[in-house]
Amino acid sequence: VESVVDTSPKWQTLKDNLTKGKSFDVQHSFFAHPEKIGPIKAQLVDSVMGQCLEVLDQHEARPPDDFTHDPTFRGLVGQMLDATQWAKEKVELILEVMDVNNIALFQFDRIKILRDPLPLVHRQFLVNLAAKTAAACAGSREKQQFALQLLQSKGLVQLSASERNEEGETRVMQAVANGWSITDIDTLVAAGADLAEAN
Image (tube, rainbow, N blue to C red):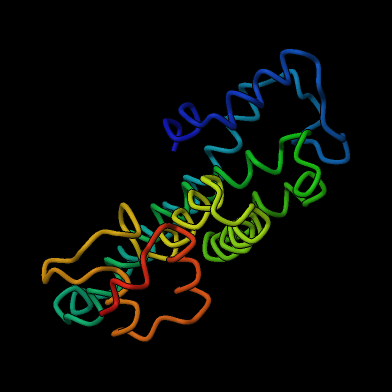
């Protein structure tokens, strides 16, 4: 989690803003001392790591039979993978709402997001990405990037909108065959997929 924070462009922007004296509102103690970059980072990392460890603790408390029952074990593996991805999304969302230049998100309750459970923050992350995708200009590189990130966050795409699976099926073919929603198919097209690939 700490490496995700350190390598995030949003974290670098936040540090730059704090260094230049740009402060946040001080209604919460988390932002009462914006010059203290270390404590801000530490609280962010501790919050996200704590929630990941809660998932691990829940798994360790499960009876051994749960790990030999295929459907249950598949669910547990999925939950752990989700927790890893959602932790990264939580870091990204918190850093984004801490950006004083981001008027749309700066009014969010940062402390609430910090404390919210990972699944709830994941939903907020998707809503934010969907809004950014919708607001971006049609056909723009920005819209394509937001759309691709949205599909990746939903687990519908891995690397690109034009990738194929092991059977040679394009993402468009899979979307149609697997009953994706119209919204997700529209997002796939915005991410660069060609609907002609459905044939």
